[in-house]
Length: 387
Image (cartoon, rainbow, N blue to C red):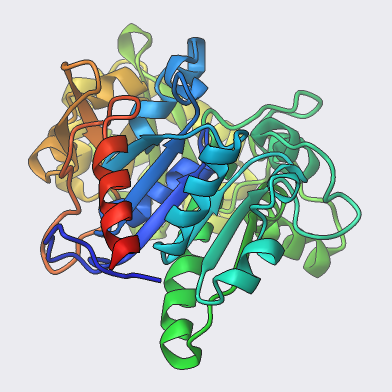
C-alpha cells in the first residue's frame, strides 16, 4: 500500500491517500475533513455522477458543502472492469470510506472482511445507521434517529416533537469517522495493521442526549423538553423588542442581573430584595421576564446590542442561514471563503471550525467536475502498479 502523494500541502495528513465510496452527507463529511487536513481523497462516482449533485430542495447544498478538496473518478463498480479497477485503487490507498445501505458492500466484495485479507494495512470506515446490535439492519436517516434518540422530543414543545434544523447526526457521524481514522493511523504506526471503524447515526444522537439521560439517572424524573424546561437561570430567553425584532439575552449570575438592570434603566428590579439571588429570581421567573419584556419592547435591537456588548452581557440576534453569508466575524476571521464550483461559478465555503498553528484549513482545489480526475488517477495507478 502506498502513502505517496505528489501534492505538497504542508498539512498534517499529507501523504495519506483515501478512497471514498460515499454519497449524501455522512460519508462525504468524513472525506472532506480528511481532505481539508491534507489527505488526497479520491471520490468514486458512478457513471453520470453522484446523485447528491442534483438533489432539490433542502438537499441542494449537500454536494457543495461536503465535497471540497477531493478528486472525482468515475467507475462502474458493478461491472467486472470497474470492480477490478476499484480493487487496484484500494490497494494504493491507506483509508477507504463508505456509507451505503447495509449489505451492499459485502455483496460487491468490497466489505472490510473481504478487503482486509488482501490489504491488512487498510483502514476501513463504514458510516452506518446503527452500530452492531438489534437495530443494525434498519435503514436510518437523520430524522429517524433524531426521533429514536430523544432529540426531537427535547427540541420541540411538549407534544410537538421537532427535528433539529440541520443534518446534525450525519455531520457528527462524519466527524467521528474522521476521528477514528486519525486514531487508526496512529495505531497503525505501532502495529503495522489497519482496522475497521464504524460510525453510526443513532449512537451519535444518543451522545447528544446523554446529558439528559444523566439528568434522569440523577433526579429519577424524565427531563422536560427544552421549551418547557425549568431554567437554571432567571434571565435566559428570547425577547421581542420594538418592531417585532427578537433578541436572546442571558444574565446567568447576580452580577450580570445587576448589570442588565443598569443597561435597561430598571433600578427598581436591581434594588428589589426579593430578586437579590438567582434562586429568588427563578422562583418568580415568569413575572420577571414579563417585566423585562415590557421594557425591552421599547428598545431596538440595533441600539441595544452595542450596549449589551459594552456591558459584557450574553446576547444573540436570531440569525437566518442566509444572513451568515455576510457575517463580519466569519468573513474577517477567514472562516468563510470563496470556492470555485464544478460549473465554473464561485460560491462561499464554510471552513472547518479549527485553527491549527494560526492557520485555517482552506480550499485548495475547485469542487471537482464529474470524473474530472479519472484519467489522472488511473494513469498514476498504472504507473505505480508497473513499479
